[in-house]
Every structure is written in structure tokens, then in C-alpha cells.
Image (tube, rainbow, N blue to C red):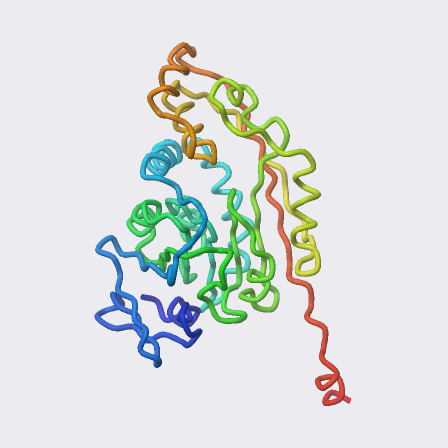
Length: 294
């Protein structure tokens, strides 16, 4: 386990720093809490009652792995890596991929910034099994983004969030000075050619406004870019694309495969993304700090 990754972590029970044991296969804090890696290489940091949120199933994860491994969203992964890499050039820099899933986008970032330490976080153990194999140099954690993140204050330089929940206050806390939050969201028209036929969830209106509102008070916009990908998908690709997203929680694979069987051998589909970059707002100086500076 890279020293920078270990230094970024704190115990999810008592918030103390960790020491690594057994070649990085076990983590222990001074209070005696310890966590052993699963045989696939990830750590489960869900404590107490775990999480109330529904994790991606094994079928959803398999669909995502197959779709992304086919390279359909490679342009998106490259764009995220392009935006993250400049902030990860320094020795000891660290990236947190919140909602890492199968680790596909984090892999692209680490290929572009190989010296960076990395933490991948998701609530699905099925996804983390894949992510730990794809990114063995990262610390892969089962954890809930809506709980206090198991990371020290100011411990990371970049947070990436690709189609995943955003905990603004926790992201702001763990980002260091000059840190960067990179968020990927769909734009209107995303996958419109197949959304109705497959039962995918529609794009919520005013999504961009709600994104900025959700981060207001913690972050300020630092630009970003729009990205359109022209996809040519087989019926199996279409089924995987539907199953790998939120709709996969209520779609039946067998019924979906039958529904898309009538599609042509190739269907032209437009994928439309917005990649937004944010910086944490400066923390106002306390009265005591102001007095000390004068």
C-alpha cells in the first residue's frame, strides 16, 4: 500500500490514523479497530448498520464492466484524466474516486498520473471486487459517501465523481488547498435514442442548476467542458447500458434482452456529458486567526 494512500486514511470508527500490517492486507488504528482486506483486495469500511442505500447488484456490475471494457466511453475516461492529471503531478498527490464502481475511470486517471496515490470508494462490494483487480495500486473501500469519509482533512488533491452521489461538505473537507472536484453528469439528449425502449431513467430538468446549488457554499466553478460521443451499439451493448445505470435496480435482464432483440445489428446512439470542475471556497479566517495575523 503506497504511503500516501495510507496517510490519507482514517479509521471510520474513531477517526484515528491507520498503520498497515501484513504487507498492507490489514489496517489497524491505535484504538484497536482493525480491518482486514477481503480476498479480492478491497476493505469494507461500512460499520454499524452499514448503509440504507441500495448497492449495485452483481448483474449491474457485470453489465457495467462489459460495456466499459468494450471502450464505448473511453473518450469520457480520457477527458476526466486530462482534467485530473495536472493536479496529480506532484509527489505524494492523491486522488479520491467517489463512486468508483468497477474502477474504470480511476484506471484512466492513474495511467495519466502514475505517481499519484489513489482511493476508490463505492458501496457495492461486487463493484469493488472488479475495481481492486483493475487498480491494485489503489486503496479500494466499501464505504458510504453520505457518511463521514474515512479520509483525513485536506488529504487529497482531486476528487472525481462520475455519475455518482456528491457529498459537498465532505468533499470540501478532504480536499487540500488548490484541490479540484471533477463531476460528470449527463446532458439533455443523453442516450435519447434508446432510453424509452429500454426503460432508462430520463434526465432531470435543470440538472446543471441543481448541481451548482448542491455545491454552493462549499465550491466555486472552475470551468469544465461538454463532451459528445457518437456510439454504435449492438443489442447486447444496449442491454448492458440500460442495466449498468440506476434503472438496473428494477429492470429484469431477461425481459430487457427480449425487448432489445428487435434492434438492428448496430444502433447509433448519442452520449452527451458535462464534465464540471470545481474548487473549494476559501475557508474564512476565524477571529482568533485574524488577531494573530495582526
